[in-house]
Length: 412
Image: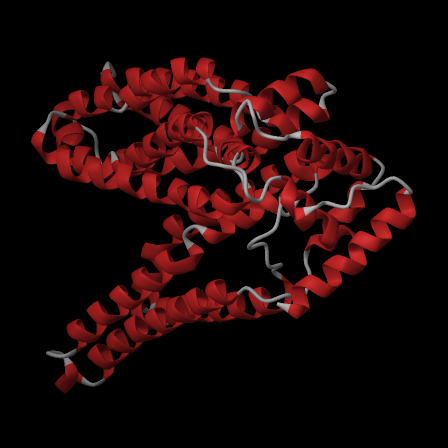
């Protein structure tokens, strides 16, 4: 850990020297804060949104036959219905960061819930392809809109000692929501399934009225007294919040004096072992799948064994992807950016993510028809590039407060 701790200490000295009154970012300020009922309730309310996003992503597969038969859609029409959710995500992601900065984390999630409820109702009562697509687009727009506000909300209200664990549950609940719709989808009508998709949002909307706003956002917009009240609710009435409040205030004041060009400095040479292991595993999994197709197409005597090799490749890919790449980038992206660029940076991240997802989903069939083995070898090469990127540029954030992480990145 010397490679992480030493640069941070240097960065902290620079902060103190430059400001004259910079906070020391004492680790004791929040690292040992207890897991209070307010933190648990807030994260549960936020998990409703990530679970609901999983429902949206898992809807199209079990509903396919019912929608096509009942509404007489052609396969190309249904393909548009399936993929338009990613277009909505891109548009929502463009606005996500700015919206979260202007109306707050809770306000953004509330607006996103209204879009989602409208989207599900449009699908439920649709009589043709148009309203199906409108509803699906609204679902994607909602997911994109809250894609940064949700994770950053969790990161900003949780104590340092449990932040990583609670953040990782966001990805888990999304996967669980998808799995639930895959499970119950074949058992109910597609209109009933879309009504079930409304339920998590009906639970989250009143829940948002019961939980505190992010203390860091409140301090950023000049509502210091409300920030203190929110911290007291989250940390407990008897907890000493003075150091954490001072750290937040000093960091926001410093980041407001820092040029937004500092966003380029978040790419630092540090170690992120779990991500590297995960990327190596996805690279290996893609190679095994590509090799299985290569052997099947070129060495016909291997035809009986190539499905086994392909299955092993899929299991390796899924297992290692779940180990790190599925959740850790979400955690890091919510931690590394200072307040003055957090909204813009969040929008950029998710626009790139959803645009890339759409490109992959759109081009996959064409690539597979061109060369099945070559498709997965290209994916393996991309995973290999990910390994180099992580090794050179991804910062380590484990065991550090948000202010410590951001201070060390800015001042190294």
